[in-house]
Amino acid sequence: MSEQPNIGVIGMGVMGSNLALNIASKEYYVAIYNRSKSRTDKIIANNCNKNILPSYSIEDFVLSLVKPRIIFIMITSGIYVDNVIKELSAYISPGDVLIDGGNSFYKDTMRRSLALLKKGIDFMGLGISGGESGALYGPSLMPGGEFHAYKKVQKVLTNIAACIDNEPCVTYLGPNGAGHYVKMVHNGIEYGEMQIISEIYFLLKNVFHVTYDNLGEIFHHWNQGELNSYLLEITSRIFLKKDMDNCNIVDYVLDIADSKGTGSWMVQDACNLQVASNIIAESVFSRYVSMLKEQRLTASNILSGPEKQKISPELRLLYIEKARKALYLGKIILYAQAFHQLAIASNKYNWNLNFKKIAKIFRAGCIIRSKFLQRIIDIYSQNPDINNLMLAPYCTTIINNYQNMLREIVIFGIKNGIAMPALSAVISYYDSYRSKVLPANLIQAQRDCFGAHTYARSDRPGVFHTCWLK
Ligand SMILES: NC(=O)C1=CN([C@@H]2O[C@H](COP(=O)(O)OP(=O)(O)OC[C@H]3O[C@@H](n4cnc5c(N)ncnc54)[C@H](OP(=O)(O)O)[C@@H]3O)[C@@H](O)[C@H]2O)C=CC1
Ligand SMILES: O=C(CO)[C@H](O)[C@H](O)COP(=O)(O)O
Image (cartoon, rainbow, N blue to C red; front, side, top):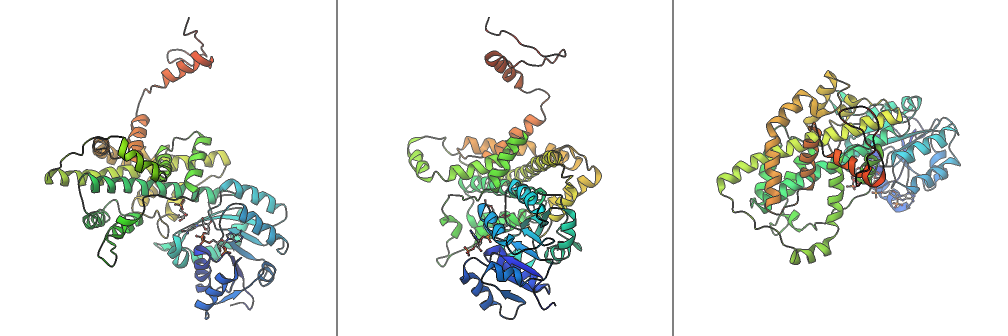
């Protein structure tokens, strides 16, 4: 080990502290710095035998590191990252590498890369997934930046990343904002999966009267098959978690979902790219509706819904299996949308994203790790240029077998007054995507009628305008 730290980490919150410990555990000497001293002191007090050197000013922190310096910035995203970069700029030197490992907006990363490149500083936007245990034991890493900068940090990233089948869950993704874009899409998928799982849970609980204990068992059972995923696994365990009075804690968790921005960025970006990521949009909007708790309480006493159906035990069993299939189908179409958005963004920004490699680094360490990712890898191995994952033979077979179950589940939810925004979005997107003809002809005619926007015809080439009201 060198006498001076060779890696630095700024930000000793959940992610930064665990990442620093992970790096230190791989025989690096790590310098740490946190805005508030107390967090730094806590890390040092709890890890006195580790290769960690605390600093209490940015200047001391930077000057403690051997050149070329590798500095991870692990702080709250937004303007704070600009402020920290500004503070660092007074002490760092050309050739040093700054790595922003937070959930930064990819356009901020593009801007920061360009500005720092002019000063000879390499900047990488690094998506990190895995939460606190991932950061500590091995996350999935999504690096974007100049390739020569990646080469400087490749070893440490490879050493700290999760590993599966002897392959580290890190790969160079592309220049500037590519890494943070992929992380944003990862989070969009995370939102979508959490939402469709929640819709299924809510239907089973409120219409089929499945208890939390049974939900835990059912989800655990589902997790043994094609639906296997980290999110399903933690969900089954959440259902079963009891407090001291033997009550299921989840029952007492307030139904207001928070969000920190990545989901809404993905949806805003989908609109900018004109990509129909409606499942993720509904997942984001559902969190916003959940925030209207007071209004919902008032409305629940004023606005009526349907009577809930009475369910026989046989029907209950039948529908639980249909729900499993609806969930898997929802997941497949969610991924189809997310990877489509990635493809369009990759073209727009010339990132040349490799979708097979992206699916590979999602397989371990990260929040969306699941069995289905191997299917995606197989699909892109066979056809790297596939337009939409739904068109791959594996997905087509599942879709054709399961689509009626999804319909039944969504109809069942609607009939019983249970909102299913994301799963409804899945079936609507699916039906639109497979339609030879859509009602867009009428929209074009309306646009031409009120705004003389013109239209194309299906029977002959040209641009047309009609005086519709004369
Ligand atoms: N938690 C998670 O599961 C994941 C989080 N991320 C991302 O990683 C980043 C860090 O998240 P996390 O560790 O959870 O956050 P925490 O809230 O646990 O910690 C935030 C850290 O940022 C520092 N900070 C905040 N504002 C400033 C500022 N103005 N100047 C300097 N430092 C500041 C805090 O310092 P202080 O102690 O002084 O307040 C603290 O060290 C975020 O971008 C987050 O989105 C990415 C993947 C997963
Ligand atoms: O990046 C993450 C996981 O991958 C973070 O946990 C992020 O905070 C999750 O997003 P949100 O807080 O909006 O639910």
